[in-house]
Image 1 (cartoon, helix red, strand yellow):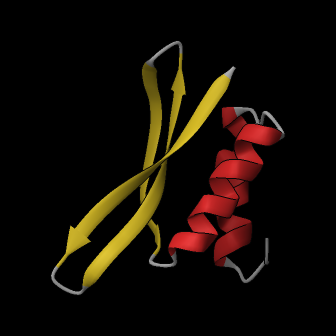
Image 2 (tube, rainbow, N blue to C red):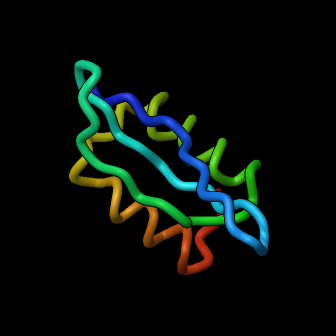
Length: 71
């Protein structure tokens, strides 16, 4: 099972949050800078973990979020 965790990129303009995907403790994929809204990235992470989203769908979920789909 893939486990999703939040990553954080600190910039001069503030923090940006992304998602890391792990399986058996190994990092499979890291997507940085998805949003600067911490509550949104928590919802994305929680949804991915609760629904046991396969990693092949992660890009679609991020795209939906970025194109104004609301969680």
